[in-house]
Image (cartoon, rainbow, N blue to C red; front, side, top):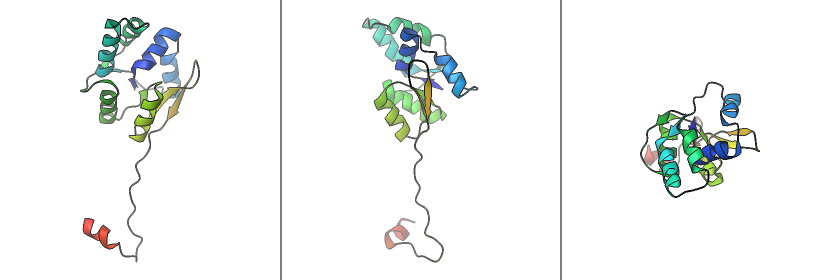
Length: 141
């Protein structure tokens, strides 16, 4: 279970019950913070972003998982590598994760998370028995 920057902000600044909601939806999940999220939080703290210090302090309470890259791309890479779910409130990032097949947990209101499974990629089925594959398909095989 990967925690995104904005999920940590939500919990730190608005009292969102992040741990309780993760436990309600996935009782055996272990929340971790991806290293790209720590980097982003550190940059926000340096810029004096309101709430960043609280979010960074909250992040320090969770184990860290290392990954390359920065920001959303780094989190996506780690999620795919580990087969992990991501908790995020970023609508654009949610769509990107789901399209990439990564399940997400998103805030539904002030105190609840909602689970959204990642999209499954459709694999073309082989031709039914007794029917020949089109010429182009035979060439690809």
